Amino acid sequence: MHVYVPSLSVFSVGNMSAGGENPNMFTGWRYYFNTYTIKGRSNIVYTTYAATALLVLALNRRVKRNRTLREAAEGTK
Image (cartoon, rainbow, N blue to C red; front, side, top):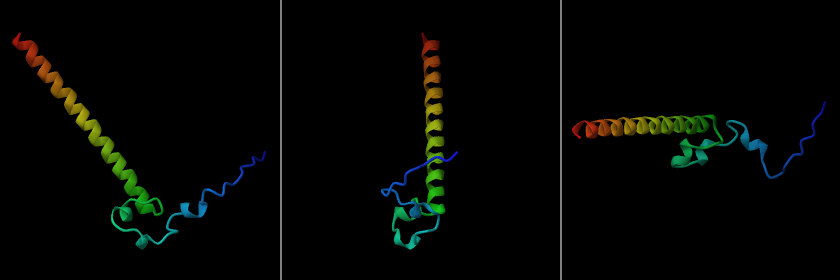
């Protein structure tokens, strides 16, 4: 069974290959976070994981602090 997938000229598949572009053309933060190189893509993933972990830790800390404050307030009544 063959499935026909029309090619869209809007998307450039050649730019999706790893290492196709010269990484020296990027400057500043774009050098570290780009979608053209494997290193840039992995940096994006690592940053996403780190941000998610920090968010989870912050929310857990907030819940524990609120629980402690609530228990302390109930104990003084």
